[in-house]
Image 1 (cartoon, rainbow, N blue to C red):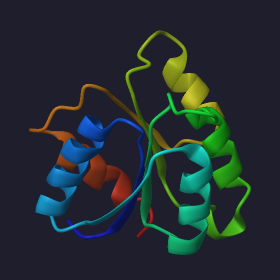
Image 2 (image 1 turned 90 degrees about the horizontal axis):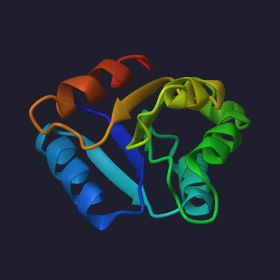
Image 3 (image 1 turned 90 degrees about the vertical axis):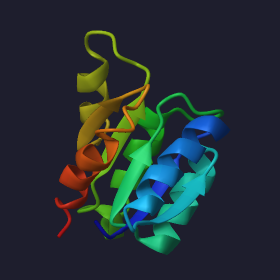
Length: 124
């Protein structure tokens, strides 16, 4: 699996695990700790995939997804919510905000790469 992936995640432990798994699979991983930084980085990087936490400081992931979708350069970029929000309706709320997919936390290190690969292939 190859690709340029932007992870917008404020939790260092979650970011470390995601980065470790994806880099081990051959991906190039970039990160942002908040929504504003993530939006700016996405605009300059034009990643193949964006993994987006919903619980972010300042601007939540739903707002970040909406902002990312306003950028025509990112219109075809899959955005996947990676979140502990797992109540009924949370997945639908993420999809309505512009996300292409949804992965629940805690992530499963044994299957996470396959989940990500499925979304990464959407851009190609």
